[in-house]
Image (cartoon, rainbow, N blue to C red):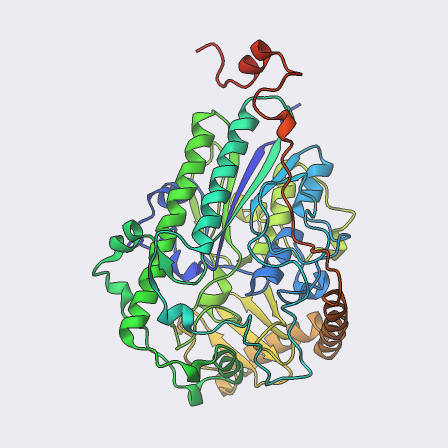
Length: 502
């Protein structure tokens, strides 16, 4: 029987796919990602399931869109009964492990992972719940603001740098441990970084890489009054009127972002070097949870369906296979059925309730993928928003807003809404019908509002009096580490050595 393949998943946070048209853009200093891209299936048009951390990650892990997972926003519980790729692989005999961020909300902080090496970087409770009952409310203590832009610059340590350093170190430790061969099961290790997510603060050696880079120049902004209604709401949620953003601050923010991509590249290189040094073969997946606007259109961060926010890099390196570019639109929710196929896992029991589609046919050149669906129902919205990407077309729908239709082939920056163009009437009707068949937006809105109202009650109740946090607490069995008196020193030293006999 052929051994099931080991799987290494590397996830980064808020990395826009527009910088990965076919692997990393030429101006990026990312030698490790460039080398990985050369041997990978490169999906040039991959989209997130939802352009926000928690819903995007829950979708990626489950192969289900937010309406099905009910992870609508960054404070919605990811319920324990939703199977993830970690559940499927573990059920099939895999050891499953997470080092880093996954933004799980609720008491279940594992979701199929047998082991978790770090706590999360963000809270696990309901405190970040939006409220559709107060559509113009801005919750200052946790909403994004443009301080990440005005505060961009250099630092040798930050909250996030400390976290990523820890995530990488523990992932390397785990790979060394897996190489020792004490556990004969195939493994799936997920390493999830929080960079290049804002704040745009980077270490000097990475900052200096982008001195004089032409891509630092501010993109062409769209005036507030000319933005679509949702973009205006995003700007309002970021408190844009409280900041007078200069061109130099935009350059610094973009420089910090690019610098942190290079920083993450170094961490990925360290992990891949351990994999190679320990002679372990694995499928390597590289993906982001969502993108980053980075000043495009005058917008920052994510929370919308425009390309810089919704498109992500996605690459799959298969041992013994050559790299190739795939331009068909795909989704991060497709990774679960793809990984299941590679590991020989049958998803028949849950297939009717899995939104993602296996990419193995696309990789082999024998199949296609249907329209890509995206959902958003979090901060900055006042009703659920949905989108479909089908070939060159992107259609955006929300009950509160006018329809948007873009032809990405002729208008890659999405500056011309074709929803009112008579020449595009047939396309609009086709996309609208497809959306109507997939979504009942009134019912979706009701479900989100119900969830929000319940969570506001529960959060306020649980913060009154004694409080038991849900945040994951990594445990160490100190009595089983290194050398202890119930161990034989000779056996221990030999068992913990890799390779042996050299």
